[in-house]
Length: 358
Image (cartoon, rainbow, N blue to C red; front, side, top):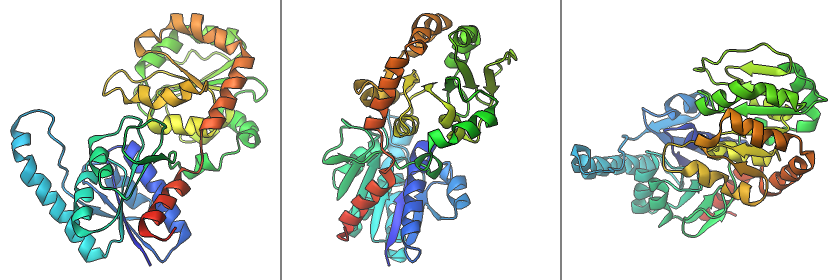
């Protein structure tokens, strides 16, 4: 019987791959113990218990990025967080710590090293976060989702994905998906989405140029996000939704996707072999552009800067692509060649190797 401590959280990008691996471990052996280490402030505080896992807490201690009061108190706060995790490791008999980045991971890596417990790191983004840079230095194994991620001794394992994506047969589900959204399964469909909150730039671009997409013979399935104020023109072939809780069906009906390029989004789209136009989020550390780089290099996607994605670009750049089915088919084949649906199994293989049970 093995006891696993999976550390990560804060955002869905850290929590979702963690949960996919947790599900894989639990499915393999119901006798093993899977604990999740997180903070009270992150998404994991809700998502982990909902999935049926025990969540143990560590204090949230962000790395200081400038000299201020938080920087002065960081050493003492971080030391306290490490002690919290060391106590959990000892009291629960943890055999291996698996970190996915985020606030909970950094103290978990240090605690594991001091307790002599092996560490496995999974980095979801092409541009790694500080916690995983720290953890990779002494980890028994490091897995990354994207080729070229700058972490020492890393191997490409892909992204642990949610079950509904891994198991999706797009061709078999296309008719059901078309009926679900009210589109024609025999006609090509462009899927546009920007996450649960939407993407203002994408909404503005298609709000001003949806007619050009329809005139090109394509249908448009546009997930605007829950906060969008974009009005639905109510024209045939243009389906507007604020939110979709069956993204598997949206993927099943999509022939081309326009979206942001978060790590999970790129991994899911590539795993399903769908060509894409990525519009990286312009704020932050530039990780979204890095996430899309391997898909672009393979010919599976193109990147358009946020500032350039306008109604005029849809008319002059996107519509010609929609008319070029040979290119779209080639992009789809390239996507299928770089995507993987075995990220969960690959991470579990790293864990087994760290435990000496591979």
